[in-house]
Length: 451
Image 1 (cartoon, one colour):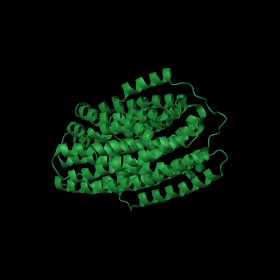
Image 2 (spheres, helix red, strand yellow):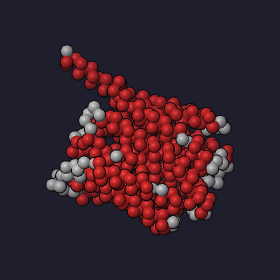
Image 3 (spheres, helix red, strand yellow):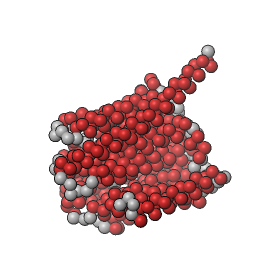
Image 4 (cartoon, helix red, strand yellow):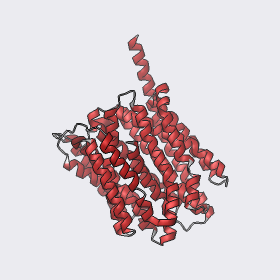
């Protein structure tokens, strides 16, 4: 399951890191190149809830295998098309396929591990994201120089093939709830709301935040969201049970994921642009310089189960976010300095704290739902990740500005973007602090009742 998730992270991180070099090599418009990445993100985030619902109805194993096969086929089609709108269409198909992979992997973890084993399983699953994110920029630097976009996409095929083979042999056949009807109206409304809102967020930096397309898309998305909320409250078998939001651990953990990944994804994007455009580094060199970020993310997620065991998931979440905040503050101070060592040192607490926080929040979310609703809860959790990531890239990318800025201008804009990311992590840490206090009060009441 971790390898499957790593494939998804590897695909996204490779393309994000390759964008500046591809723009110089191909001469394609920045908007067209951005949509090769954003088309996949748009469809992926829009279909996650439906992917979770399909996993519950048809079984996580079957949906996982279907998604992996679709992911491989879309990557091959994208590599053969090379560029243009056909490549964007292939990337959209890739996003649709991976939208069924991620919730299925978490559903398998929920069914396969008990309460004692699950924190470590989730930590390894989250750490696999760090592995994919770490390998992505380095592989991108090697592949894009020699083979362009086709080589970047073809590199997906070997790990996808191995994951498909391993899932076929190792993943147990879970119980499918075929009697559970699909909520087509709810799925359509949620899909429309997510697609319209994400389109507005992704198009805002290039088209203008107050352009007719962006404003109309945002308004239509808000209306669809209101309609979806109304439908899900009244439906007999809704796509998602809204009563879960009444659970403080579920709702607040989702909010911390949204804000935390807003910062993590936005900072990763800003660093890739800043190092290549602001400092003139090659894609491979820039990938190596940012390697401490995903590497420390990996270590943070692996350390999270021990931290959760000693302090509880709520306190582990808060402590992780505090460490991430200290890292961003160091990073903001290092952006004007030319020391690569200082940059690497600043990335370590940011990555390690983010990894511990993401693993703790995911554990809080899954522990608050039953095994039957694990796939849908996983889809909602991953939707929070994706919406936070898209918002982070859009907002911080807008603050960073266009490619025509001077190197000094890029450094100044990057510092401003990092301060915004720091504010988002500060808000997330305050939400986590309220969770930590509620968890402490609950533990005191439980101890008193035992006495």
